Image (cartoon, rainbow, N blue to C red):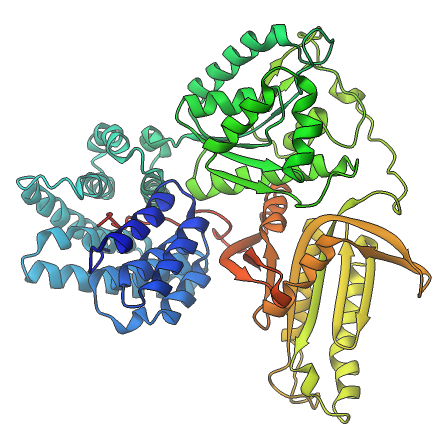
Length: 628
């Protein structure tokens, strides 16, 4: 959707948001589009892009809510009607049976209405894209004959438009031609045109992902092989890791003399695997070698640091000597994003390195899902499995649990060997001296403070009683539970169990008949979740274990801003959940949210269960959104 006014500030803001969208960074695109809408409330292009960003991130229900919140249902602009149809279609894929058919029929009717209006008005450039979407939906609703008729008409329109040769929608016209031929069974034409679609689409990888999703769904519905679409393969996403470089003249797991050979192998892997973006830290040695080569080849670098930059340089860059500190800053300056696993000091707690690596892995997995891209790990390793709570071997083991591809670049004297099975996890240090990574849930009940003394016993019996029942079902997975009034604080070791517990609590609460229990109708549970390093210490007052730390405070600040009946979680929670391959859960992006008590803004996700095809992935559709 184009801007209504092209003043420099408005145009610059829109272009920036659209650039992030094109690179598949839908969370950032949504944030920027929302900021633009706050600055220019009358500019529908920002609202359209914000909703489209959420939809492409897989947050369909959130996108539909924002569509309504922004008042877009009041407008009859074809682009907005098409966006509503897109959301109905995505909701259909998230549903089953008759509900799916009904939603797809609604979407088809909206698209076909847009198509008929444009065709009648002679606006062929505005007719083909709703026409092809209506045709595709006819396939999914079982009307193959109707789908073929529409696809044939769309091809006729595209032939007419070829005379104009408009550059602004050349990609979408060609993608539509592929889709129409796929529906009509003209497979030779599909194979011939797919490489050209890829060529025209680069570097807007988001639109290629959208096209690929649509075509793969159609191929599956038509019983055709997805091999037809192999030419749409996206650039890969990589998590990178490996040994720190030893100081010149000092023996180590990666030494100065090996740098040329290791760099050459990194260059080869990035080139042959078509790696377009990388997630990892920036220690001297393997990390910086990968980052430098990725940037040299035009890739996107996403840096995750485990703790404060000053401490990181002191412990992971300076000890290698040479010019590694300068190279660190050069990479950091050119990185597409930089974030910290924790903003606290190192304090000799090695678990922070593992926490950082797991966050980077999870972010890589989420990025790959959003872009329908291949994902892999690239690791520089000497083959030796030394014990430790963190390090290259731990990263290798964590990644191998996903079953995803891994490229190992050997270094050191054990080039031909692999000793991973010899790794033994070290004993955990005393909890009162060291932080450990835990998942935390905070909850309370909206409306509790307004309960009367007559209602409080009912609350204890009919609300906290069922809460207790759910918690007992997770007792073996729970490290700590505390309550006060309506407050709930739960600490768990496993993020998957935390997600299951949070949603089980909400589901149990929805089953409570508040009127029958003598309670007001607005009483609803709010839950916030976070994962991070915390201390387990003995509470001097209660003489029992309790959990402390900055990340406990962070978890506590999420619940007050969570909508009633929902579970909000941090990006870290969402990323580690992805790493654990928790395909039964999805985390829909809700945007940068101001935390309670002036804690600052955090990137927040809505946790939900998945069914059918839904999940933290692109739910794509051919949609035009050219830069104004």
